[in-house]
Each structure stands twice: as structure tokens, then as C-alpha cells.
Length: 332
Ligand SMILES: Nc1nc2c(ncn2[C@@H]2O[C@H](COP(=O)(O)OP(=O)(O)OP(=O)(O)O)[C@@H](O)[C@H]2O)c(=O)[nH]1
Image 1 (tube, protein in one colour):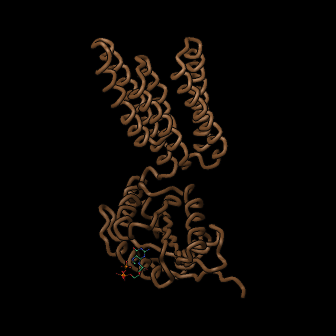
Image 2 (cartoon, rainbow, N blue to C red):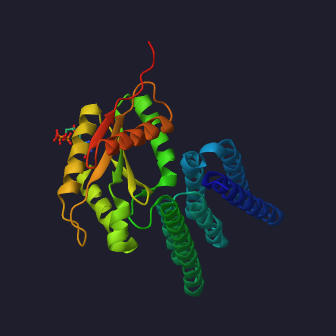
């Protein structure tokens, strides 16, 4: 299940349950003749049903739907206004489902801000109008609910982020992994097509890895790959991204980089890596295949395969060289 679909279901569940709860409150208040509370609960219930419908309408872009903040701000401010205007002691408890809903539906910071804005006037009125014991119990209950809910949401966000990072990162080097390369490259190509900025790529292979492995063992090779990757991170600029394609190959995506630029950075990488004295190993060399997106390159495989073919060509010229392949143009 995708994150968007999961959010749609939890939002729908949250709005639905809260709408049922407030509808129940409305009926109860109608039965006992508390008409102001009846109308308040009815209005909240209608707004919650609106949230449910909005969730359904925005099901494809649930993560960025801005209407949830408006709906929840309306619900929270309605309750704050009622707490300040009505003389109804039990109304402070209505804040509980709203706090849970704020955290369930909004991003953590927005949920926390809205809940605090709701909680402060509710607690102030409770302390001013209720006996000390009741006020204390209500305050502890609401504060505990806010803390526990905020912690659960923070924990969930943290776990989700870690799982996403693990899925796209190579554990040895910290670079992105090969699985993420195609997706990231396609995204950059679409961005380059939309904005017209140049895009280049480099396929980098460490030369003579079989010999290095035989001489220094698998651990020595792994440590070399790790150090090379760390050096690559230092050499390239912030917007560039590095992917570990296999045990001895990296791929670099270089946005905003034209043909002249990729030649400059490829030469800088080649020189830096070949002049460095690698701990326990000494000097090494790398072969680099570079390419720049042409107007005819629309798929990730166009750039990826051409950069790798250029790298193979560089290798065939002798170790420690770079080769540039121009991009494909559309026929005019
Ligand atoms: N993507 C990328 N391109 C680079 C990098 N370094 C150099 N280039 C490209 O090479 C061109 C010339 O780079 P430099 O010789 O360092 O000159 P520069 O004007 O100081 O480069 P910038 O200020 O980085 O644009 C730049 O305009 C870029 O297109 C890099 O780390 N990443």
C-alpha cells in the first residue's frame, strides 16, 4: 500500500469516526434540551463529513492536500469560540477527539501548533470555572493525550523516514543504491525537459578491482570503495547525486551541467582519485564515461546506457581515462 493510499484510509477513518462521535453528542444534547451544544455538535459533524468528502476528492495527492488544515482550523476555532462563549462545563472534553484528529491528519508541526492553540484557552477556562480537582484531572488528561499522540506520530514519521532511507541507500558507502538510480534519473530527465536546463551523467568504474581484491582481500576492496565514495562526496557539488551501481562502479547524476561542465568535473574526479594515496592500497585509477542529455533523450535508459558504453570505451583506451559521448538529438 502506498503512503498516499494509507493516508487516505487513515484520514477517512479519522474523519468518519469523529463525525459519528459528534453526531452522537448532537443527539444526546438534543435529547436533554441543550440546543446550543446540539447546534455546535451538528456543525462540527457537518464539517467532519466535509473532511471525509475532501479526503475522497484529494485521494491522489493526499500528502499535499492543503484543505485539511482549513477544515481542522475551522473545527478547532469553533470549539475555542464555544468554550469561551458558552457556560458548559463538559465541553472541554470535546477537545480530546480534535487533538487526536489534528495529529492523525496534519503534519506533526501543524498538528502540534493547532492542538496547543486549542488547548491553552480550553485549560484557561477550565481552571477559571471548574473546581480545582476537576480542573487538575482535565488538564492532566488533555496534556497526556497531547504528549502521547505527538510522540506516536513523531515515532511513526521517524520509522517511515528510516525505512525509506534504508530502501534507497547502499549500506557500505552511504551513496544511493542501484535500485533508486532509474527512478532518480527519470525524475531529473523530466525536470530537465520541463525547465530546459542541461543534465549530464558520469559512469565511473574502479580499474583492476580483481587484482585489488586478490591482493588486499574483500575487506580491503570494500574499504577502498568506501573511501572513494567519501572523496566523491567531497569533490562534487551539493545538487549532484552519487549511486553505487555494483561492487566497483558508481553513477553520478549532475543536474545543471552542460557538456563543457561534465568534461571539467570528470577530469577533476579522475585526477583527484588517481593522485590520492589510498590507505593500505596506494594508487588506483578509474575509468569514466560521460554524457549530456540531448533533446532526443527522454528515458532514463538513454542516458544510463550511453554513459556506461562511454565508460567501457574509456576502459578500452587504457585505464585511468575518461570518454565523452554526446546526447541524442531529435531530427528537425
Ligand atoms: N555538476 C557539477 N558540475 C561541476 C562541478 N564542478 C565543476 N562543474 C562544471 O564545470 C564548470 C566549470 O567549473 P569550474 O572550473 O570549477 O568553474 P566555476 O565557474 O568555479 O564553477 P561553478 O562556480 O561551480 O559553476 C561549472 O560551470 C560546472 O558546469 C561539480 O562539482 N558538479
